[in-house]
Image (cartoon, rainbow, N blue to C red; front, side, top):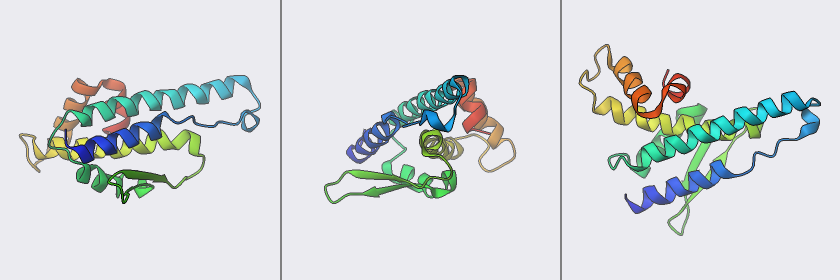
Length: 151
């Protein structure tokens, strides 16, 4: 794996692994709070699976992931290169950071995978390409990820 891509995926992984910082006082009910935690944990699992899926595809470079970040999730996840050769992740919150930041990573990585599969599919730009990509995503990543991130 190219060093830039490895650094970027490690940075994204650290961003995903950070604690969400939910505040119980925003919920007032244990059931609602735990439900939100389950949803956030599910997003973490999706993000980790997508990071692994991107990691072993050599033709998806760091530049492709950065390009995907500019349009996926309304461009709210910003990836910038640092002077030391690393990457910095910034996220502009839409409503509530703890429920969104992992989803933003999922959206960026699924966009990068979509571009990868679009370029290598047998349909080209013809009708049926989207169905092909969704089918590949379902087979390789599982139904739950494909239903959410490859619509």
